[in-house]
Amino acid sequence: MKTLQDFKQSFNSAQPEASLTAQLKSLWYDGKGDWQQAHAQVDHLTDRESAWVHAYLHRKEGDIGNADYWYSRAGQKRPNISLNEEWEQLVVNFL
Picture 1: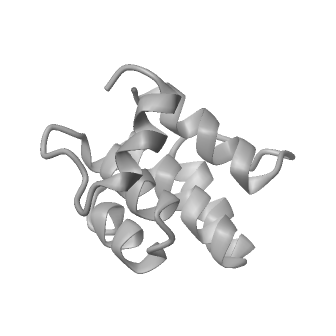
Picture 2: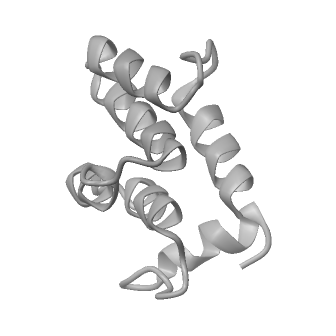
């Protein structure tokens, strides 16, 4: 997968591609509307990239305090953009 469009088209599949990173699998499940499965992909990981996705997921959930903790762990600041824009930025970053 090379583009955001390719990534979105993969939503037609029942499962994410096995070759995707944990971060992209998380964003894939979130894009398909499965927040719980998206969270499960990164909840146990401690690297900065996973923390960034984790932060986004908690922002989406509405738990801003928890989101800000994870943004800090990721070395990021909570963005002042829509959730959809952040999701797309994350996907493009990790592709």
